[in-house]
Amino acid sequence: MILLERYRDFLPITSRTPLITLHEGNTPLIRVENFEKYLGLKNVRIYLKYEGMNPTGSFKDRGMVMAIAKALEKGARYTICASTGNTAASAAAYSARTGLKSVVLIPEGKIALGKLAQAMIYGAKVVQINGNFDRCLELVRYLSENYDFELVNSINPYRIEGQKTAAFEIVDELGRAPDYHFIPVGNAGNITSYWKGYKEYREAGKMSNLPRMMGFQAEGAAPIVKGHVVEKPETVATAIRIGNPASWKKAEQARDESGGVIDTVSDDEILKAQRLIASLEGIFCEPASAASIAGIIKYRDVFKDGDVIVATLTGHGLKDPNVVIGNIEKPITVNPNVDDVLKAIGR
Ligand SMILES: *Cc1c(COP(=O)(O)O)cnc(C)c1O
Image (cartoon, rainbow, N blue to C red; front, side):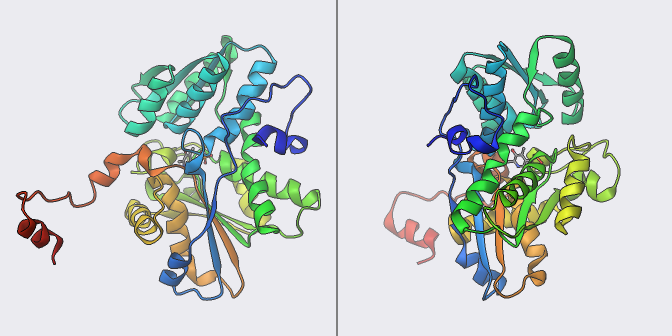
């Protein structure tokens, strides 16, 4: 069943909402036993919710399908968003699918190559802004308030609603909520969505427990942890390169109500975690997603026997190939004969 139908009772769907789909959601929840062993954890189960398997390669599709359905319901013709890349890719795809025109504002030179390619091929009007993401968001807010553009950033409440479905899927599969949920934090919409989703599902009697929400910002872009706006956010994890998160207060609420934390991880820890989970488990996520993994590594000592941990891998690694190619030793070139090849392999 498509996402909007499956979780219809928990979503703002009316008889007039078109049930559109690119077959988003229903992403794999992968147990990672090699990683558990690597951490030296015996009676702890770790699962990764691999959101890179969504139609445009990130969790943004869950919220976008809902936001675009509501935009269609009210007769919108244009969508607009500010983006570090994945929102743009998703808005462009769902707009194309449903005959809407999409406009995306991106910070110049600061979005991963794969994401830019996606926005372009889906036919969005892509405008690069000589400024950062936070400035792009201010601009699209103004434009949507004063012109007939439908804003599809996560300040659009329907985005938050759609993104709750990831928490539902996790509970449906595990038969309970995890003890800890690890997640990267950028604009802080997703941590807000998961917490809302877990709470609503418990209210509906689907499980009795709630997880601690464990959010991670990059050191150079950690406004919530530092307690003030970061004017010039910097991190290799471009999807969370945000200095003034739109859902700041709600993220703090999720942290405090759940007894969780919002903490930082360094770029070095992020890149090491990205490589570790790829080489240990065969799962390639983008740098921002690896903040979840780096967070688990940082908090490995807090887990107790029997704990169930879920981490969201927010986006696919192929979105940002440059970061890998720039950081790992390049393949060597040898002459085309068996001896040289064996020598290169080290056999
Ligand atoms: C958007 C995004 C994030 C950050 O999510 P927020 O809801 O802005 O906190 C993290 N990782 C990836 C891959 C993203 O696309």
